[in-house]
Image 1 (cartoon, rainbow, N blue to C red):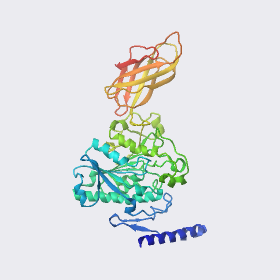
Image 2: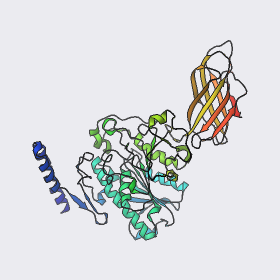
Image 3: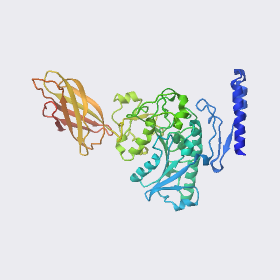
Image 4: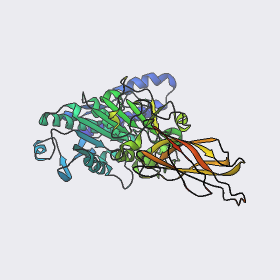
Length: 487
């Protein structure tokens, strides 16, 4: 009976929309009012009712009005990982929960995937395994492959039911284990980030939501009830990695700031090691269903960065900056007192004094794993012969932990007495700096055999503004390492 009613409804509304499209503009208001009478609604027991009226459909941002599927068709599963079980336990909202390893004294973190990168559909399970090496929590990987592998508008609306299911599971756990909402954290990627927002809106007092590159189509610039926003949890942190405009560059992620703290690694649009996409916005369904070639690299980087942040906390320090160009120009280095949050797992350690940060946060990453970077500013004063020579200057940093690769400090004329500077995003955390290694060359046969050296180096660490001075007492020949030690 329900299926017949819905089919009958869609047939009538399709005929109505076709007729209205053939009428003159003077009938548009009448058609709109008639269309309202055809609005549909579906209800699913404890999950509530879902309509396709604005703001859920028929708006500029959500032009196609689609009702979500019933829960069985979405196929949601909750896979519990704890330090007590090496493999997951599927949990349900029934008495079998008491046979699981769910612990009432532990925090609980849900992970909701969205767009499924080919051959990487089970990344939430892998993230749970990594998380449990860092912290003793209940980690629940949410699976909804059936509900997300469909046309985009349908997946976006199926996420509403998914959000209600997550909220219902949280309520069930709270009642059965005498827990409070401030023990729960939802991590959502892509469309899953907005599902997390929906779950949060149904869970008063939820501790935290992390949005991993929330999707732009059908969500950006919509009413806050539709998308993830700061009212959905006590703390909402968002990582933007594919924020190019969808209409022109097929960036699936939002550029809009929607959290208490919004991170824009590498500017938030094109990630190192990834390529930009080409095509038409009309191909969204084909892209989403996987029938049209699309590189999900930028979109997937958000959860890859988050996973790594579990193990490399200091590798994702982010800097407050008005825009990506100012950050790239080095104008936002270093951190002031407690002004730099850590993107990823430890973002909630940051104190947002005014409730919502109106500042964007930027950082750089590597092009492949490990992605985390450690920022330093080097100011090197050159010593050498009085005449200028062409050449190249290089530096590497060493500390009590590790040493960095060599970085090119300068290319061009070498002028003694001049100070050369650069920002270095090092691939390792050197710990406490112990020396700077200087080298130069020009690969030109020079009978004068000049020698150069670093007479003074100022090394500034980005995350805490620590400055160490190094003094050189020699000059070295071409391609010879000078070890510059603290003054």
